[in-house]
Image (cartoon, rainbow, N blue to C red; front, side, top):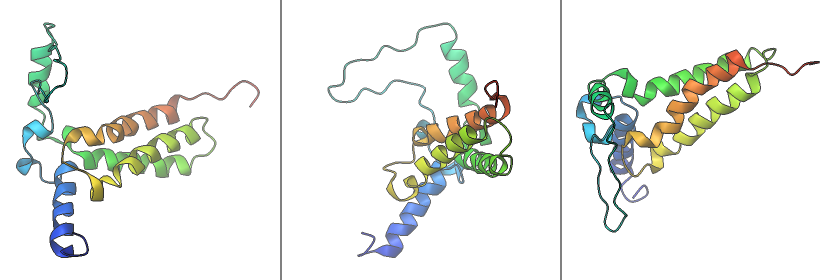
Length: 148
């Protein structure tokens, strides 16, 4: 497709990336961001739904945030990139290498998704979200071993 129909293919890939990274949240179906129910697939074994008293209130609260920056991947990509840059300029801090590694891994994992993602599901950028939140913690709270 990229060779036969490059304009349509790359237009489609751009649209997929825009939806996946939350650049058009109004057009992105909510169930591709956060699924409030279990979905059974063919012959997969059944999965039991969480039955704690907290499940429904937490799920409802999360659902109310779907169209906000909390579920926009570009925020986490920007934050990971910022963390990567900040850590690169502060080599004295103990957690710099770890913070840079975590931030870079989040960014490098999602970069190919722009061309290869099979869907716009928010789950595909979960590691970016985790990395963008963990990198600053590694940078701020890592301690040098005694004697270094």
